Length: 237
Image (cartoon, rainbow, N blue to C red; front, side, top):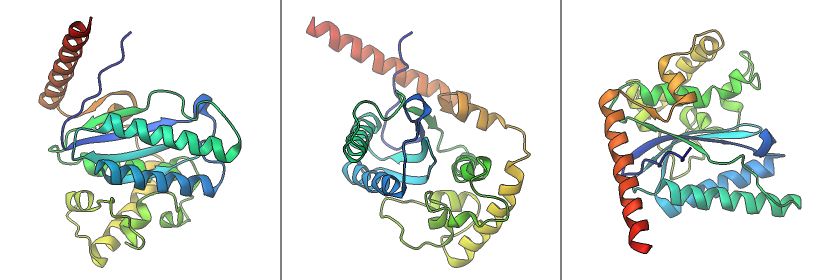
């Protein structure tokens, strides 16, 4: 079956995720994680991407990102190729680092609640994986954007917290960040027992997070892109 064409247009919001080849680790140590972060900064500088949330796990990563330009595919090609080359060079390896085609769920930016749902899902990955216990402080898990939401120290220029905070009615101030941290402590407890919502089901299994009208517009864009590709192929033959 043919792969689904990627949705690309200026200002698209995505949840991007990929795993290690054969589900093996893509991070062997903190140096690998620091290299990932440096490379993420480089691709954001090259593409203009804005990152709303991220988390690095043992054998996978999650990015909640926005592309001011229609350049997800080109950016991800450079990003994952560069990560693979650098990982292999460091560890004396060759071959694939990632399992294959990354997952990119396109998100409706106009639907209220999706930014919070998605950022919660990303930030609470270490809790669901039992890497961070309920008695631990989530912001001490270094390899996510959550510490930047709570402490604001060391933030990268490509990090964008205001959309998530604003959807909750919080400002990016000491008080707003404190309120966000208190909310996330409650969410950490809830996430271990709550049932899967329709939005989370779409994140995990679908390609689009949005209501019917948004989904239909995305399908129309996909069909238009396919038609243009077919026309270009025909003109070359």
